Image (cartoon, rainbow, N blue to C red; front, side):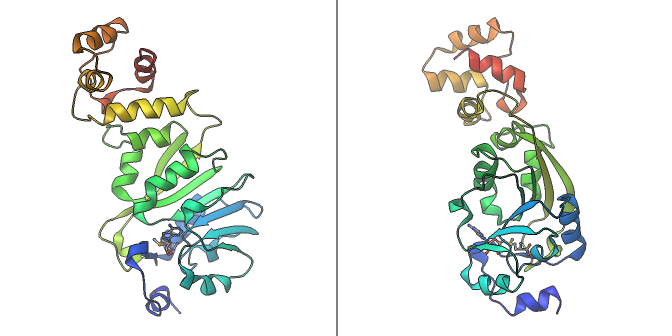
Length: 256
Ligand code: SAM
């Protein structure tokens, strides 16, 4: 039976972001990007009806699916560990693993935080199908960095592997997608990423404002004081946060 006929036998749940991948070429691309070997430990989020899962050639597969009604179908695949839970309650394994997911779009940031930013065991490789615009934000395609950009880029290198039309899914979502590959660095680019992220979040809260204005408001310091602090490190206090480089951020953070 073809993918769409299988899906039509079920009542898809919009609130769980159930837009199933039905384009075999794209499924193959996700698998190829994951460069799976037989002994890799694979964690897949949101396997749905298992179209992607069935193509994973590994002996160690763990899937996390919140929808109880899909569990009997996933059980038919055999030889996979099924967790019928919300991925946000999932306990990350303490062994090396690869993460694959065609995830509901509303879960993109929580999943990035859970598996990359806040994880003690970052996956060796992450391959995510996500909304095209979010993927472009993660790589700062327009050269404008964001909190999301830093949440990912401090920890590794993201890359858009392929754009995916909304027609590759059934039911078709409103937006196009992209396959994002993320390869983590051995350690984050800076020694105290949490402090860095907390600080830049303050600065990005006034995204369209000059950084001196946002910092002056936040710390209750006179603007002239902030400007002279910036002058002391030769950084323009009129910069907008989306244009600030990592080395400049580090210098700015050291002032506070
Ligand atoms: N991987 C399948 C595919 O590509 O055809 C399905 C992808 S569909 C976009 C997202 C899947 O994630 C659905 O099966 C949905 O039930 C599941 N899901 C939604 N929210 C979830 C959550 N919080 N935790 C785990 N799974 C979730």
